[in-house]
Image (cartoon, rainbow, N blue to C red; front, side):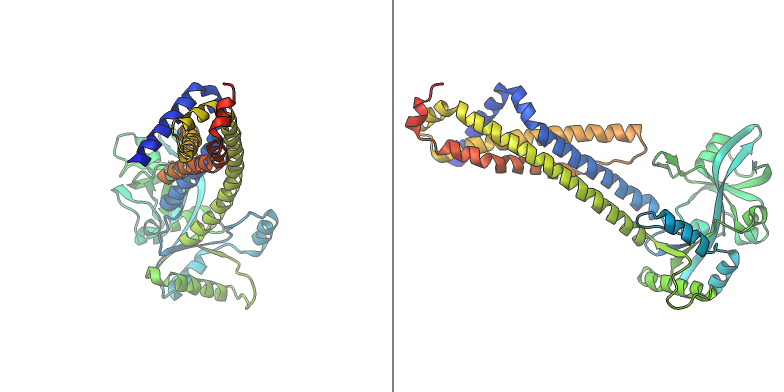
Length: 413
């Protein structure tokens, strides 16, 4: 009880001291405020991107992977990219059919290619719509769900049927609240019957994920040829054999392309864990830079707090002498200054949290960058600021506690 009362008294004295010199206290807190704001802002960006990676980029699922012509999961190298453009041949429908007939550890294997097109209905025209020509199982290999109608069938694919599934934005812009299923649209002047409408996916980085049209791969290749832009998507028979499934696909494709042992792959295989791993490496670098910046701000803020607290000890030497002469213990004086320094830095941490939250809201509203403030960032920011205050307040507090009461009383106020 005595310790609790002593702490309350120290907190009350510290609060009175902070209120009596608001401007000085605020200027003292600038380093802590900047450090906390930077820390939470960076953690908010990383957390928001983590959510994006989990919900969007990794839509292939924990048991899925993609085969593409060229992929970079680290730093982009323009020279290497040009080299791979020359070395890596395009994926092709014939290779797809070969793989489909040979794989044993893959339960679904699909193929798609895409381009940007214009889509029209009457006098209305939408430009820069993403057109995907995919196999009938492409819907099971991605994150598309049907809201109305259906997806196209394997028979429609093999017969090159002119049928289409619309993304939510395309449907809303062309048809509004009307039913689109059964109606006819034109894709670059060619008529297509709408057989389905997809569930809205929303936007990422300000780019809509619903401005698309899916048509059968056979129809796509008949119109645009099958010479470029093809990629394959696959799902392993079970998540436990994902790596074996990827290895099997790699072996079959290398054999089909007659690649000798020791030769590099002339294609790339991507899975969700590879994408998440690449993102983790990137966020690790970002976090490392942020830690360095935050450390500098924290040290500067801590040194400023220590200087201010040393000045406070000098200013209140007479007061300390009076308190000691009426029975205050060395521990009471020590507690008072430690509580004051930790309260000062803790308040700076809370102000930094507020600023970081405002920054996150403004960035989320004004830019396509996804930001989400995690509770862990708030707790880390405030705790770190309090610890800095305690650490840099130890020396001034010890200096105040060691003052001789008689010598302190002789100091003029």
